[in-house]
Image 1 (cartoon, rainbow, N blue to C red):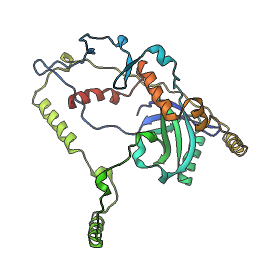
Image 2 (cartoon, one colour):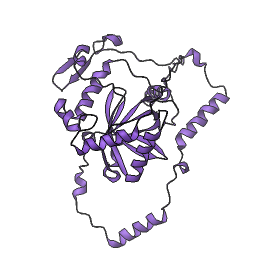
Image 3 (cartoon, one colour):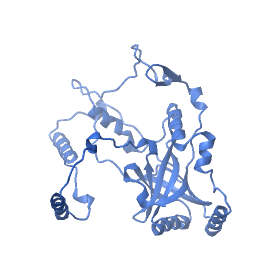
Image 4 (cartoon, rainbow, N blue to C red):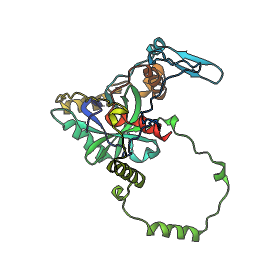
Length: 317
């Protein structure tokens, strides 16, 4: 696996250097579009509503409220705060059952990145023993995100969370009607569940569509029903992040200082969430503004699997 980026977990006054890896990957076969006549790869041009082809450097972002359009220039975005931190800040610890799985997003493995993994192991064992999730705030690809730290197979896992206002309320008038379920119906339904109950094993399930798609592609290649890739499109290169080592920390001293600071009414190593709100709005609003602001900048490095995604979407369209 290739690390996406590296940084540290701010756990009170304890600093835990880590490397971040994508914990999941898609198994979808990557497809792109070609011209049926000459098999040339389809490329897309940027064309404005007035029929002019536009260079990327000449494109600006805008907001449309339905009646008026506001154009935002590069100078406008420079006025907004820039998120560049590689620190995963622990905000609080909450019971595991208080975070609805609906809020979970992409998962990332965290690997210790220091000469001594003791701080990492301490955090891992603490999360496991207390049966709590660490609510964290972090920045990934220049966007502020909310997430949790939890333990998975002896590895600390960072899992992104949706912001609270990104979860829709389930409002269905059809469910307001009074429906009576008899005791016998419920008993029969429960009996069916019991007969189908087992332990979950994800390896028992496969994606038949993707498997048959790959078989179809392999059959065409074997039959010689193909064209030379070099005649249709080129290849893109990718680069890996550099690796750096972390430093050994005085763990007990940092933990003792963190506890003492909390007891004396201190706020920890970073401003609290309420302080951040006073400084310029909630984390959700800051994330929205930051994501928009940084859209004008050059794209961040991505893993090779991410580069292939646009092609697959084009085929689906």
